[in-house]
Structures are given as structure tokens and as C-alpha cells.
Length: 275
Image (cartoon, rainbow, N blue to C red):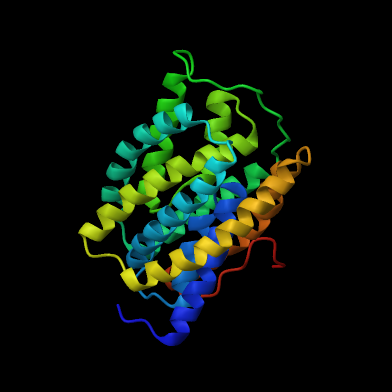
């Protein structure tokens, strides 16, 4: 895929948004990356957008992980086991995802995100346990949730941070800042696994991926700094995700609208709009 100067600038700016989201809350990178690639940068093939975003999100997550690791907030024992289990699921999920028509895959993903956004609105602030360790009691849950989130991430071609953060909190009871930091281990692993699968099938724009990564590095530094600042305020970081969920819902509708319009052959009313 040959990209124009305009697409290069838009790709760089989009990468900054993706990096900021990953640095701030450990997720949201892919729900931003794929629509940005398709509807802003102008990548015509959804599978290419998914494969390219997987590389960009994985690379940006790795950079953000190094920032969080230096802050000592990554719970490595739990994160590595979670990520290892999820990589198996991500590989299988990516094989299934490539079998689904691109626009159908985007539409399915958007519907899933709408449901998750609604659930996030009910989230309550959680302080979490001061010390979290891996043990025989929580390993089965960590492995099970890692496998499930990895499969979902691979199928939709996403990093899956919006699933990984709550899964880590549920499995281990860790505070949200530790979950955000630790989730980046899995986001990196899932993204690399999915990207390798898509790259093998020739569904990656390497030039665009490079621009996203470059922009994401700058955005990630800003996001990590903001995340630490919010974490110091009790419950503030928990509020960021729910308050952003309505924005995700709007983005998801923009993804699904073209698909359903083509399928139904007429305009489709937006959720919450007057009939």
C-alpha cells in the first residue's frame, strides 16, 4: 500500500492518540487505531487496517510498558502468566478473524464495544489489594481469563487492554494502576501474535505502521504521565474509563453505520436519536 503525504500526517497524528490512550489507561488503542486507519487515514481494506494496527499497538504498548516498569507498577508474575496463556488464544483467534469479511468483523467488534461501554458506566472505584502475588489459588483464573481475552483480541485484531485491565483486577485483586501497567505486557504479547499472523498473510502496511509507532511514542509519554497523576487522586483513574465509554460508543457507531447502511440499503437511525 502506497500512502500519500496527507495520509502520513494523519497517520502520525492518529498514532499519538493511540499512544496516549495506551499510556493513560492501558487500553483503547485498538478501538481508536482501526477506525482511525479506515475512516481518517483512508485504508481501504479493513483486514489491512487491523493487521497494521496490531503492529502499531503492540509496539506502542511495549514503549509504554517500559515507562510503567520504571515506575515499579508492573506485577510481572501475574502479567507474564496472563500474557503467555493469552498468546495461545490470540493466535487461534487471529486465524478465525481472517476468515470473516472485513466490514462484518468491524461491525461485530463495534457491537461488542457498545456493550462494554455500557457496562463500564456502572463501574465503581476500587482500591485493590496493597500486595498482589501469584499463587495456586489465582493461577487457574489468571490462565482462564488470559486465554479468553487473548482469543477475543486475536479474533478482532486488537490489543484488548479494555478487557485485560478488568480481567487482571478480577483475577488478582490488584489496584487499577497496577492493572493498567501490567496489562501492557499482555497487550504487547497479544498484538505481536496477531500482527505476526496478519503479516504472514500479507495484510500489513509497514510504512503506516511505522508512522503510528512514531506518533505513539510521543503520545504514550504524555499518557503515562497523566495516568500517574490521576492515580494519585483516589478513584480518579477509575472514572476516566467510564466517562470515556460514551465516546467509544460514538466511535463504534461510526464503524457499524456504513456496514448496516449497505446491508439495509437505507439510512439507519443513530442510537438515542429521535424517530
